[in-house]
Image (cartoon, rainbow, N blue to C red; front, side, top):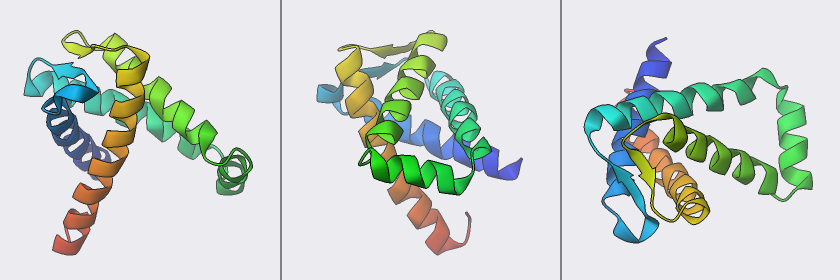
Length: 119
């Protein structure tokens, strides 16, 4: 449970950072909306953990990473659709760029937290 809370907070911070990058087209009204979006993204991303690692890795390799990218874009768009105040200005393109930016920023933040011994 603690891991989910940390993941939600880190994702919310990442979403707030992404919303400040205007060309991506992600708009978030408040930190609370970012926290809701982070919780939804974390919950739906957690469903991929239900599949065996061999299956997920095999699909990712065979599709050259396209299937995991598509699922990330769908989850990002779904979070924006479910949370009022989390808008995608350019619809699909904002979801695509937002999902890529989220993966990069989350990776950096989790790396820093790992160095500090917090995650």
